[in-house]
Image 1: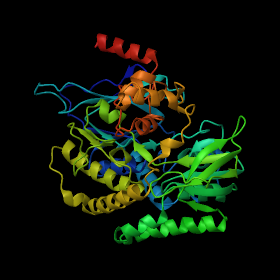
Image 2 (image 1 turned 180 degrees about the vertical axis):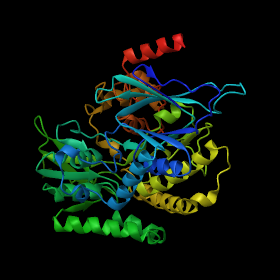
Image 3 (image 1 turned 90 degrees about the horizontal axis):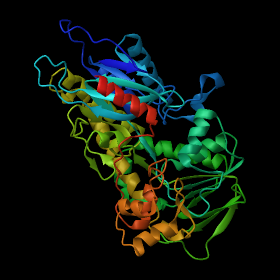
Image 4 (image 1 turned 90 degrees about the vertical axis):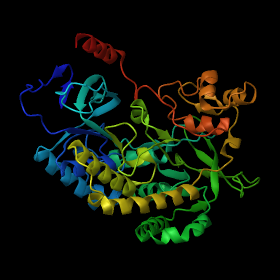
Amino acid sequence: MRVREGGGEVAAAPRSAPRPAPTLAVIGAGPAGLAAALAAALRGARVIVVDAGAEAGGQFYRQPPAAFRALRPQALHHQWRTWERLRDGLAEQIAAGRVTHLRDHHVWFVERLARSHSPTAPAPHRFTVHALRGARQEEPAEVCVDAVLLATGGYEKVLPFPGWTLPGVVTAGGAQAMLKGGLVLLGRTAVVAGTGPLLMPVAAGLAAAGAEVAALVESARPKAFARHAATLAGHPGKLVEGARYAGQLVRHRVQFVPRHTVVAAHGDGALEAVTVAALDSAGRVRPGTARRIPCDTLAVGHGMLPHTDLAEGLGCRVDGVDVAVDAEQRTDVPGVWAAGEATGIGGAALSLAEGHIAGCSAAARLRGAEPDPDAWSAAAKSRTKAREFAAVLRAVYAPPAHWAEQLHDDTLICRCEEVPAAAVREAVQELGATDARTVKLLTRAGMGWCQGRMCSAAVAGLAGCEERSARRPFARPVPLGVLARAADDDEQA
């Protein structure tokens, strides 16, 4: 292992010295990353956890800062005991010297180094993890390791509608993150809308924290679950969890509005109300069903997408929007594993199972041994069941098929480049664009600061093309000075 941060470098061991144990970099400290790090460390691997957070936990186990002195942070979470087990296990492995946790390290690229043909080469695979340290993300850091495990999570899918750029309109996950991490309520009266399993815990959390949740507007049809009764019966824990959230919503008198969607958000400089309307069987708004709900906060979500930038930068195969892996969670790039939401959105239980399998596999193969599937047989069963359940959720919670019909010509699609729906429609209908990349070249949608992460789903929907990941050279913006210093280091090497 070589760690070089801010220009300094730990000297390499003399060639005659015994080679240290192979090192695995786990990128991400959410459920998948923590499970992978613990599994690998307990099986003899040296592990470096590289994470952007100030503390471990990722988005799912996000905690308020210690300075807030929150008396009951567990009130904002479920699966708290699982988090405590992961947290305590990580602390034990760090104390034992088997795990190093690099906090506030924002990874922007993983470099696959050329394999040496020398018989004295120290490792079969070598990678350099490039990161930016600190809140300002300007100080470079490099970590050289033998293998990489990507547990990069996912991000929310954003589907625009008239008024979605008003202050007070946030994603459902954003509202939950501010509540969990900052103990912040955006306003007094909220509407939670969209589709997906995240909406219920968000609405319940906001209501428990003191907000008046005027409505939970879900575009899916609850009766759709009946078609999957056999699969759901095999997940009693999930059914109990859903019933618990439903009970909380009833206690807080949150109105549940199924098979409806947000048509528009209204306000003069800030959100004042939303209009919702019923959907027909085809997913179109039914005329004459619109109604206005006063609110100062709208938390809206339509599911999630995997973070695949680092995987694609390494050349890993991506199927649609998911990083492709085998039964051991290996990608098709030697020395690279992936686990959790990056391989397909499926929730914390699936992420934990995949992370454990990936960590076991990586530890064995770094030792030059063939992995024993018995080491993760229980996790493999959990993975299979969790994937079945995730498939049901994807089928039931699909966004309305005709959501794009509600967009006005002046509705912004790409906020970074201020590209309206009219420009995207013109690119498709008049200029012949048939894919998101061509729309991007014709309209600049996706060329801004977020590099299409916010607008890619909307552009694909308007263009009528399949939603696919867009390969980007870097996973996040990088100061030119960092790239210049990296080039100087390469020339001096």
